[in-house]
Length: 403
Image (spheres, rainbow, N blue to C red):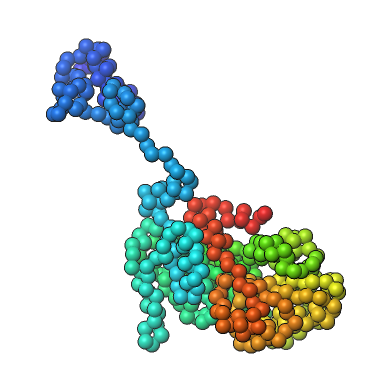
């Protein structure tokens, strides 16, 4: 049985209790039909039933308005959303470069995660996370610099620990990607170690990788997970511009081999400088022989740009060749200061005037003195912080390097 005088909302129509009460009054329904009416007699204490719409309305039917606090800025809004969605940003650090990890966390205005990463007496690695990471977006800052194998195992175990602790997303932040030079079969019966590294990171549970200056950009193709690749050129260019080109006049950008031409070209483009390349031949690992130089370097200041300095054989040989061809000053810019074996002695005794590196690998003051105080280390924590923030917010990373 239906009564045309009775009010019922249409399907999917939201009607507040006040509207229903007013409609019921206008139709002359009985007191029982007007049970939704909001007068002081309908509930104890003289307060009637209120709908959420009534509470949010401004001064409606005498109800006080509800005012929301204004959002201060985009950063506070993002933090509030993260907390509401339980998707807060976390930074976890291994032992390879805790200084860089701490600087990144400070820039992001968060604390490093409380974790215990140490060794058993037999050398096995123990990892224990001391706080809840369920549902969090965790970035693990751990380079695979020397001791390479120990740092790799630390990274893999930290990722596995986070996966088993139900972290929502795990990003391996690698300031230095070990085994990156073994990216192809350059001889019979040798491994492609960079591909194995990619497989290990995926199997351990990493959802994505943030890498800094890979030895070869094609290493990104070894992964089946997203890889964001950062470049050091903006850091080097900023240093040169802020220091009036470090005393160099109209410098020539020099690539120590054919493989580094892309990096040297990007550097030269930012500085509007000319290019040169050194024809390098190797007779074995860490052994380089310079053949000749392509480009004009006579009576010019030169900047050698490379992705790393390991034993410094390539760098010192290149500097000697440039000096032999009439170069005035020779500065070297290398991203990763591996500095193994005789590297420091070679730099100290070489024709290089200055070696500028990043802090992707920490170089102690003692090692800098051993190089003849020729090494200058530039911080990259701001670059890492910007990239991490963009990844967390699902924003573009490449736009940082397209300028």
